[in-house]
Length: 101
Image (cartoon, rainbow, N blue to C red; front, side, top):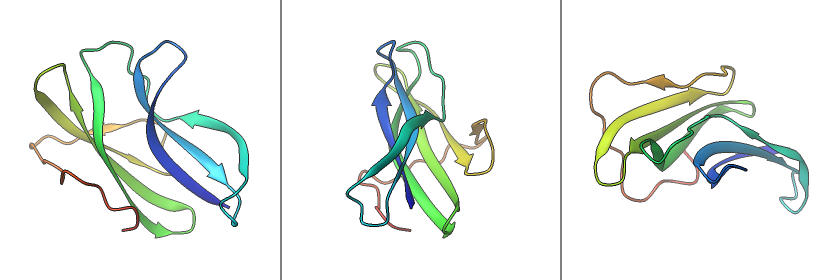
């Protein structure tokens, strides 16, 4: 199957990055979504997500983190890691994300 990465509100109402596996026909969801981040306040909200694939199961997901009114930082997640990494220098993403890298 394929992995789709997206931003969605978790059970506590805070936006987080999640991934979902879908069947190759893209019509069947496989299992439950896996939360990739654990933001727990409105002071850090993920936005402008972009995912780039290296192979079928290896990808990087970049996203900006904002508070209510301003950009805070950009972070990334690798498909084989469980923790997000903040990028030290400000890197801004395009307004519209590419679906395929």
